[in-house]
Length: 469
Ligand SMILES: Cc1cc2nc3c(=O)[nH]c(=O)nc-3n(C[C@H](O)[C@H](O)[C@H](O)COP(=O)(O)OP(=O)(O)OC[C@H]3O[C@@H](n4cnc5c(N)ncnc54)[C@H](O)[C@@H]3O)c2cc1C
Image (cartoon, rainbow, N blue to C red):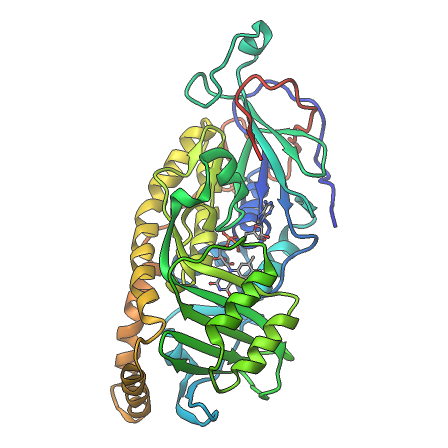
C-alpha cells in the first residue's frame, strides 16, 4: 500500500527553513508527528516497513499531557469512542476461579483523565487522520542516510569528513529498500525500540538498551472465555498471564509476561519468539496452553523485552529520533504511547518555531528530557512489580485484592497507586506553539497550512558520510 503526496515536487530551491520531512515508522509517534508537521506546512512522507498498518498490541493508556495533545489534535472524541470501556478485572486461580474482582479503573490505576484504547485502534485513528495529507510508503525501509553538505563544498569537491561536525548540512539524502532515492530537509526515526534510523545514524542498538529483567508478548485470540470488557489475571512465580476483551472487539487479547535475564534472538524471528514463550510457560496451568496455541496462530504477535532505550542525545545533524526509538520506557512504564504523542507535539512545535532544525532538535530534547527521566524511573520500579517472585507474595497480593473492595478507603488506595503514574504522565508542561491560520507566524520561511513544499529530487553523489545498512 502506498500513496503519493499531493504536494510532492521535484527539484529544490535554496531556503533556510526545512519544509520536507521523512518519518520512519507508522505506529503512534510517526503518524502523530506527521499530523503536526503537515499542519505546520511541511510536506511529509512516512515510510513503514510493514506492508500495511500494523494492528495488535495491548491496550494503552493516554493520560496527563498526552490527553492534552490528543485534544489539541482534535481526536479525543475518536479515541474515547474507540476506548476499551473495561468494566472489571479479576485474579483467577489454576482452575479459573475468580479470587478477587475489582472495578477496572482500580485495577488499571486509572484516576482522573485517562483514556484507554487498543494500540492498534490508536494507530488506525492517527493514520486515518493523516492519510490524505501525508505520503505513506508501506512495505519499505530506509537503507542509508547521508547528510547533504553546503553546495559550495560539493561544487569544489572539498572533502567533508562525513558527520555533522562541519558546516550545517542542507538536507539529507536517503536510499530505500524499494523506493527510489530521495532528498529531504530532515529525517525522523519513529521506528520503535529496534529503530533502523538509530542504528544507521547512532550505531548498534546494543549500546543503548537497558534490560529490565523481563519479556512480554501480546496477541489476539478467539474469545473462548466469553469475556465482556473484563480482564483476567493469573500469577505464578516470575510470570503473569492475562486475557481480556475490550468494547466492540469480538476477539480477546492474550498477554504473557515472564522474568528472564537478557535473551539472544533476532527480534524479527517469530519462530524463535514462540519457542521462548513455550519454554517460559511450559507446565503453567489455567488457560496457558490455550494462550500459547493462540500465540502460534496469531497474525499480530507482539513479543519484546522490557527494555529502556537510554541515549545521550536524540539527534545528529538533520536526523532526530522520536518515541520508543529515542527513549523507549518499556511496557512496564505504561507511558510509552503517551510519550510518543507528547514528543511528536513538541518536536513539530519546535521545528515550526523557526531556525535551523538542529536548534529545534536541541530545544525538543531540552523540553522532553525531564519528562522521559521521570517515566524511565517509573519503568524501572514497575518492571520489578509486574511479576511476583514467590507463591507467598502471590497469596499476599490475592488477600489484599480480596479485602480491598470491602474497604471504605479503596478509592484512596487506588488513588495512591495511581499517583506515581499520574506524576509521570504530567511531568511536562506543554508549550503553546503557534499554529498557522490562527494569526501567528508558523515557522521561519514556513508556508501557510497545507502549502506545497516537498523536495523529492534525485540523489547527487554523496559528499559526506553515508549511514548505510
Ligand atoms: C504491533 C505492535 C504491538 C505493540 N504492542 C505493545 C504492547 O502490547 N504493549 C506495549 O506496551 N507496547 C506495545 N507496542 C509498543 C508501543 O506501541 C510503543 O511503546 C508506543 O506506542 C510508542 O510508539 P512508537 O510509535 O514510538 O513505536 P512503535 O509503536 O514500536 O512503532 C514503531 C513503528 O515503526 C515500524 N518500523 C520498525 N522498523 C522500521 C523500519 N526499518 N522502517 C520503517 N518502519 C519501521 C514498526 O513496524 C512500527 O510500526 C507495540 C508496538 C507495535 C508496533
